[in-house]
Length: 64
Image (tube, rainbow, N blue to C red; front, side):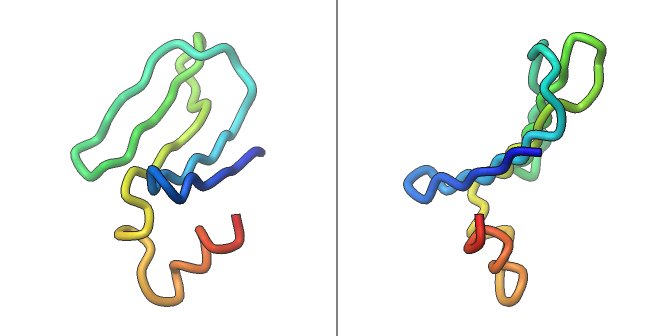
């Protein structure tokens, strides 16, 4: 599993598997799910991550 946080864009990305990218599905809450060609979740992106992770939960993006 690969994870990274882009402070400038405020995006947290968690890559779950290394399958070949197929398409993305954007949910209304700022979460983007990337699917591989088999329809399995490849990665999850959380837009405006610092707004999603507040208080103690903000440590999630501070350690990435």
